[in-house]
Length: 109
Image 1 (cartoon, rainbow, N blue to C red):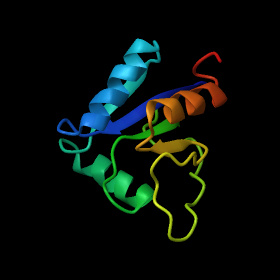
Image 2 (tube, helix red, strand yellow; image 1 turned 135 degrees about the vertical axis):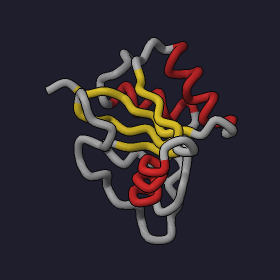
Image 3 (cartoon, rainbow, N blue to C red; image 1 turned 90 degrees about the vertical axis):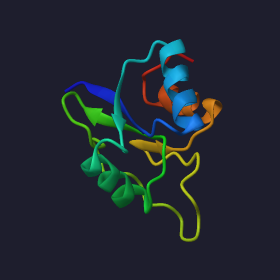
Image 4 (tube, rainbow, N blue to C red; image 1 turned 180 degrees about the horizontal axis):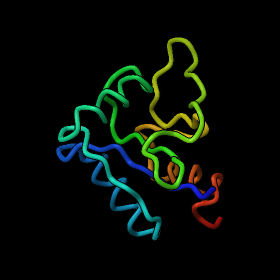
């Protein structure tokens, strides 16, 4: 089954805007989910991350919006920023996001 990139974002968040720009620049097709317009999506992000942290980017099954596998847990006491959790990365820098996309086969090295 093929997979796709889904980005959970907020319209007011500059890092969400930069993540969307980067994905466009790199030619990575992505489904954008606005957590401010979709309370269910916001609840998903809170469940996965512990709070409403955006941008949270996941790899989902072709028609899905949730990670194709359960994201690896965070280390106790650590925050989610830039942590590769397998099928998810949250608040990643461009370099972290690019490396994660390469690792997961969405971009060439």
